[in-house]
Amino acid sequence: MDFEGRIAIKTEPVDSVMEEPVVEPQSLPERLDLGNLDSVPEANAAPENEKIGVVEVGSSSKGNVEGEFDIEKLTVGEWIDRMEKYLPRKINEIADEVILSMRQRAQQYNEFVAEQRRLGNMKLG
Image (tube, rainbow, N blue to C red; front, side, top):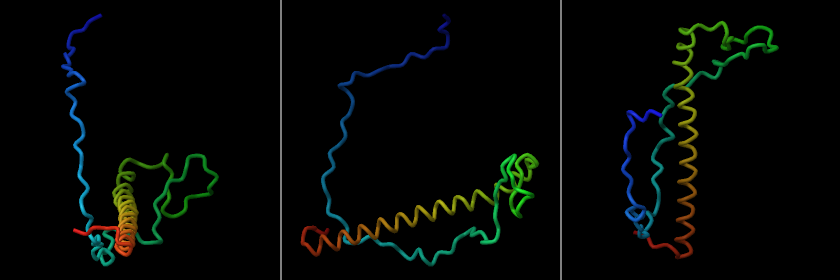
């Protein structure tokens, strides 16, 4: 066997591995600021009537619906053009889902803090 070009890896004993630091509990903020994100317009909002899709090879579809295309007849240039439109929209859709999820979590947090304050269980900082 030829071992030329192998790199020697230096290992450390298990004793030297650092332990996770202990985090002391801190007081919670009274309320999360949700900001005014509702007024932010969607940057690349797609018109509702425009659809980008793919017709599967061998599908029983009779002809292409407008906006759909056959992947076998698609050129690289056409594919790139479609991806330039599709990817930003898809990214925006996912970002909107993440933002909605974060808003819901912030709302849950605010409700939790309000409930804890009402019960007198929370120390506010």
